Length: 239
Image 1: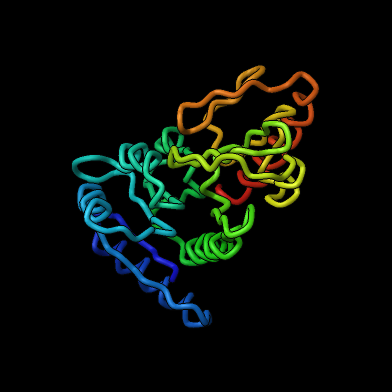
Image 2: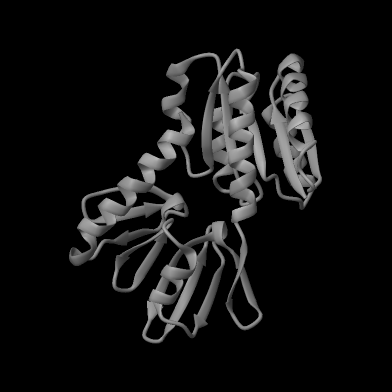
């Protein structure tokens, strides 16, 4: 079930988003669940008390207590919120709001057509984020992988949650093809999830878990090209 959360101190915004969501899912066969929070603390308390995953979070930036940017930073260490769309009254707030889970920004007052478009994009991404069988009876969710390391004829999978699945017997090229354009080879021994990259330096990438990996000299140009193309595509969808 697709779980949507709205975290905004404005009841009017909560009602407006709720109405758009309800209309959008009238034409979908899959059910959805909706959660409402008036501030970031309510959201964090719910995550502490429940084991469910929030597939899409509409997050206000200007809120009492912890603001949306602070909440986003906390959520980057939590694998139970998959996607964040920010809502703000000020463009200048956007520069601090980018992050691995952030898939879009909306300016208040909200435009129903824009909300619907972003909701549809997020739902399509949710359906595409499949659970993949990486070996016999070993399954992982695509978005939960930070990077893959090759050790001879075996591969180790490093998750965004800090967990590791070791010694899966398949070549790195197999997983590059399996996971598609969002996984980029940066070294003969590494493929990284481009959406988990926090920072690109000249010859290395920093991932959300604090891991830094070197980019092989023969992969610098191809990595930059693939990453730039993916970033441009995502920027078009976000803004």
